[in-house]
Image 1 (cartoon, rainbow, N blue to C red):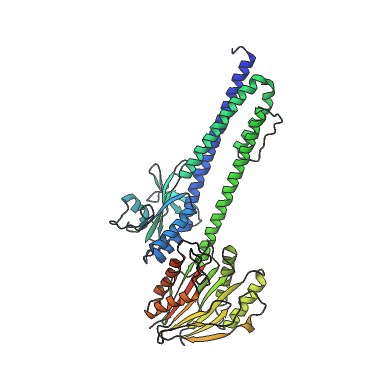
Image 2 (image 1 turned 90 degrees about the horizontal axis):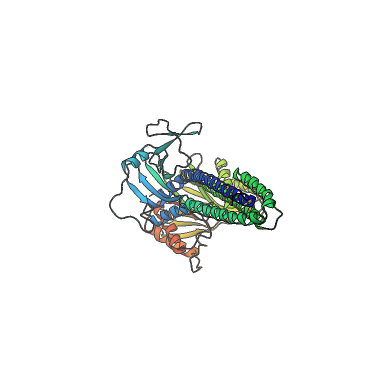
Length: 525
């Protein structure tokens, strides 16, 4: 039979097609494997780098004070947006495990004290980010002053960089010789995608081989030209040129194969482009959220006569609310809260700009002048639909007086400890950016704080909060809760936590409709 030219052509052509598709499949799978492995390695390290600050803040704000549920929400939030991370654990410098997502998905761990093994403890105490590879190697990342990263062992001797196919088991990120976050890396999604790609390539190769046998038997001569075009297109795609398309005019099985080939190239191009775009957006939002978080005070302000603390729970990655405690001269401090139009990136940009403007105006002691200058800049440098409300106060240590100006924000709440009376301090005003000159609409009021008196600034995310039954939280409930907390003589930390906890309990499982922000000031006894 092999003496037949037709048989020889069928055998040779069939063999060629099998080899071509097998080579192409192996090349694509290998290239995809390298790409996904590199992507998971890079993105998992980026996630560990960019989330460690936010998670440590969440630990100090929630888990350390005992708010396990809120801390777990922060962990879940991170894992949902980073499918390359399967679990996160938090340990101390001495090796005690404070939190492990694998053990504490639903409720806090209550067993005996968990500790790290010797190898993991060495990684925590090295104070360098380290990678545990699947082959057992531990590699430490040494960041030079030039920001270049080199790979070393525990003794900082240079070692070989991870190979392209080395899988990372986990990443340990030490924090200031005190804590360490341990990120377990997840390859399940990659394995599933590779398996699916192998099945698709094998299916296409099998269909192509059968079609080749049939068509070569009937039209051996007419096959060579379109096959050459397919081969050239496959080689171009293998080099990464996914815009390549094969032009075949025949309407037979070879033409169908060419269309399938072109669709595969288009799907590969679309998939890669969509993935890159998604990753870029996620990274940019995480970076923007980290930048905005750094603008907000992480610790309370403790003055000789006044304690001040704030709290912010954004509705999206980037919130539109802002607050800050800015040192001025001669024992004065500018304390404010602001709420940009809506929430998300535009409102976050407006809040960040406002924060920078107020810092630049920290030497101006006249609140009306501050408001006037703020309004002029925002009016000229923002769109007609972007505004920001703000409650501005200046605390004077010498006179124990709080100067207050309201630019369209919600009224200040003042609790008189001696009289056990809570009052809304309402002042006229309008949001920055709405009119050319805001000065005629403003009024300044001085509030003399006596020992244990409390002042609270808050955003509309609190009274406007809704639960699953679409009931509104309301100002009245806020005032009742604040009255009870102040009557009991709680600290600013306890008042803030109590206000936020009551709102979160009311909201339940429903997503936030707006950013939730509060600033609490209390005159020391």
